[in-house]
Length: 422
Image 1 (cartoon, helix red, strand yellow):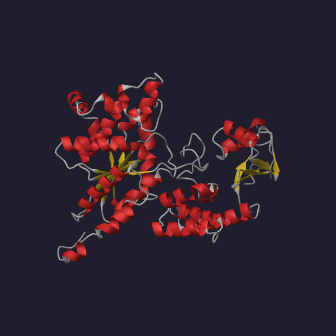
Image 2 (cartoon, one colour):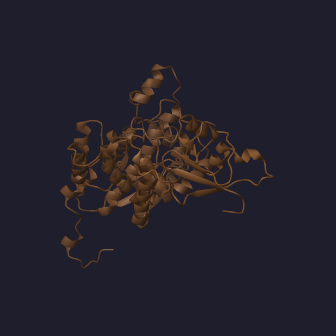
Image 3 (tube, one colour):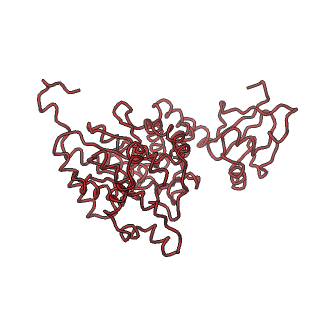
């Protein structure tokens, strides 16, 4: 806490221009006019020379987050670094409906128990990036669950059906004569009310959230509050370099991936995505990112070296430097030099008297956590991504023997051992 005797100049926050250059870096508003408006309003708030109330909300619709979610974490942390007050909101009420913003079909509704179970892991994953000592965690069921039906009707009267149908995803479904549920309209109202309840100065979200964030400005204005500044960031392209990062597409890097896996997956990103990944997923500033990319374009730095720098930066943002550097060494030996690591994860095979299906390749990889399902193993085998003892296999039902070494993709290794020998 700042001492009352501290000179006023020492209590001042960083210069407005310095803050703006960092806070607006890596943002995307869809059009120049919106960007100019938000930058101007943010500058006006920063000129007040006080900690701003900044938040971002996350619906716990799954247990694990991927690094695409960390883009907004990083933006929140930038605000933290300048001394602003950051709130991490868990949408355990909005999650009951599910955000339709990036969907062209109705999102399945989750139960309160499912949301509660998922939310237990969210803050812990966010704290890989955020400072837990300077982050307030709240749940929007604490206020949304208390609204009366009359209050909900009053909120809905601030918007028209036409405003919602102008959204691209709703337009598409309307043209296809597909159902659009009233509950999906209510999602934007609920998220907008979060801003009113917390009287926020700034809300952060993905570009797909812009309508919801702007709805918060509408309700704040109606409530006599100063409308919040909205800051939106791009949706991260997946490791395939084409589609948005998604667990369902398999083109993701999980926040909880171990260092070797995280480093290796980032190394699989195509060169075309280097700019986006450096900008959105590292602590490098704009001039540092430009220096790397310009060196690649000029032929002064091989793309492989730039990608290794990227993978190291991403991994060290989640893990201690030593673990990130060890992951780089592991990649260089196993992938670049095609060496088999001396130490690898082990899986204990069932004993000889046990049911032999437990020795099948697909069941072993699922049981060891290398693959999520037998279907994924079949897909990997079909793609030629699975080798046993250095030989590519085309049989997902191969029975494994103690001592077999399995390579999945470019960076996952598994050694099966007999019971009692692990």
